Image (tube, rainbow, N blue to C red):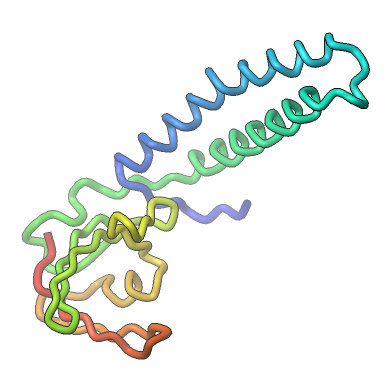
Length: 157
């Protein structure tokens, strides 16, 4: 993994740490016990439980390694970012925009925390990039498959 910084809010960091702890303290020991029990059943070449539990263990170990690397590169999005009264949009900002007469609210977050269903957009997405640094009243244009979409920034907070 390259040493690209991973931007997370406090909640996003807590979620990653919780997943890491769940995998290392609970799931991995459970799967190790299954591997050991399956190994004790005898012929490993025809033991589906052994093969399945080894594959699951391999997946868990890979995810733990991935989380270890991510956690080393985390940059916490400052709690002073995105507060009401900020003049411009930055990581952590909650932004209200108008699109074709409709209001939408987005939060600009790091890529690992992005979740379109929760209106959390990555600072590296086309909309996220367009919004960063902008102020209330400004308009941003974003290329979308359906054409250009114009967003008018109503509030930052």
